[in-house]
Figure 1 (tube, rainbow over the protein chains, first blue to last red):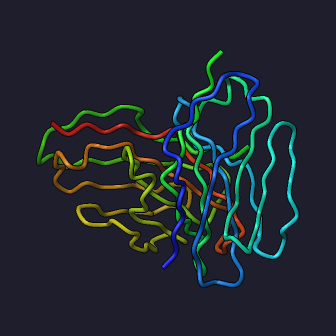
Figure 2 (cartoon, one colour):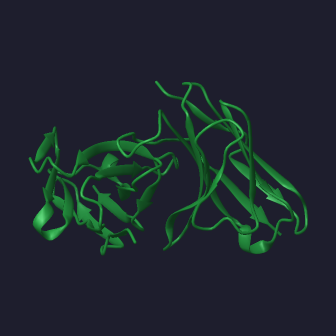
Amino acid sequence: AQKVTQAQTEISVVEKEDVTLDCVYETRDTTYYLFWYKQPPSGELVFLIRRNSFDEQNEISGRYSWNFQKSTSSFNFTITASQVVDSAVYFCALSNSGYSTLTFGKGTMLLVSP
Amino acid sequence: DVKVTQSSRYLVKRTGEKVFLECVQDMDHENMFWYRQDPGLGLRLIYFSYDVKMKEKGDIPEGYSVSREKKERFSLILESASTNQTSMYLCASSLSTGPYYEQYFGPGTRLTVT
């Protein structure tokens, strides 16, 4: 069975601090995709990134970076120089083979205070 | 941009009522999904559909049914609402079948059953 674990339920930081959100996954598939979504207070989940199982290259997009390590089954998300607008719930998700369904972690609530 | 809309942001219903939650996407996506989101439990898949008139059960289908008569519209039905169905309901769509495609989410419907 597929599983995604986000061990951090809530993280609080002060603006400009760096913060890393952890994601550990379990799957028996050899080909799979990992995703991160952001859910701001407005409620709508927003897609941030997709990574396939054969591409372990880290990715950077502005203040956001992602570290995929197949050896530890982890796909961690780092926000550099956090801002108040980064306050949201962040979900890590794993694709399921066959249909386009996703297994989501329980989410990490990030609170960035001024 | 993909637009997923849900008929109501907030809904209050009485126990035993039949409840319809409507979702519409405007990008000709093949797949549509219904989730419920509860504190501490993350997103759980109720039902999904990969084609018109086709449906598949997700992880928690009990107490729910769905209808997809047109490609752009996916309805979630609570045949006889109960208080334990008080939750945030999220609709999503994705372009096609396969693990590669990200899902696009609507703003959610917060349903309260009294």
